[in-house]
Image 1 (cartoon, rainbow, N blue to C red):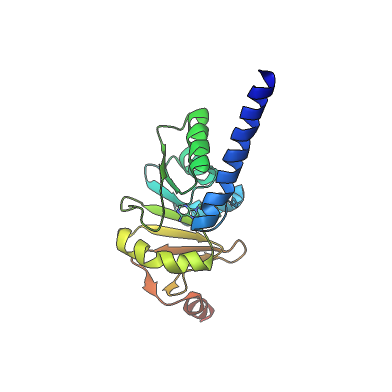
Image 2: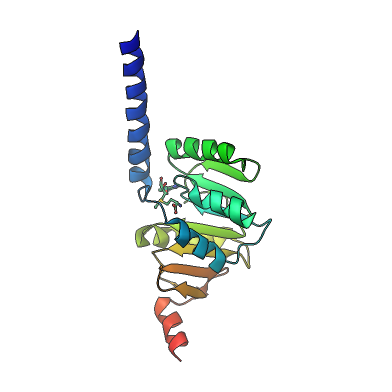
Length: 188
Ligand SMILES: C[S@@+](CC[C@H](N)C(=O)[O-])C[C@H]1O[C@@H](n2cnc3c(N)ncnc32)[C@H](O)[C@@H]1O
């Protein structure tokens, strides 16, 4: 009986680990988390306010949602393709007592409804940001802010950049341009 239980537990762990890695690998970037202080800096750059709604597109282990809800008193919604990540986020929201402020949606950020977002957060590669741009432009309301970690949106001019931590801020609707036009204006 003990052997059977052990085999069952080990198989469950192996399956969850495989799902953790394989599902995201099929759809987009892997689950590499953003450093906590980089998240705090990014949310401060976006001027996230209490009561606003933040969307994390590709929510990973839920850390952006926990910081947004716990430290910025925002409502936080995660869109995540990995079922294991979704389960973990749900459990972390419950364990932290922030479950009233955090929601997780199992889904694809290329098609997700994010119209209610005041701030959207994305940590992806430039391949994904290029593909996401049209969807975000269609979905995000005027005045909402988009934070991108590491990768810029090649056809948009950021309104602020943290050059040390590579954090790009865009205010919707986006200004046509690029990082180069932003830097050129800054140098003037
Ligand atoms: C680089 S991690 C970022 C996690 C978290 N946002 C952070 O900053 O710590 C990217 C996450 O996006 C998820 N992901 C990849 N492609 C996706 C897609 N098309 N739709 C939703 N989530 C996706 C992955 O499962 C992974 O958890």
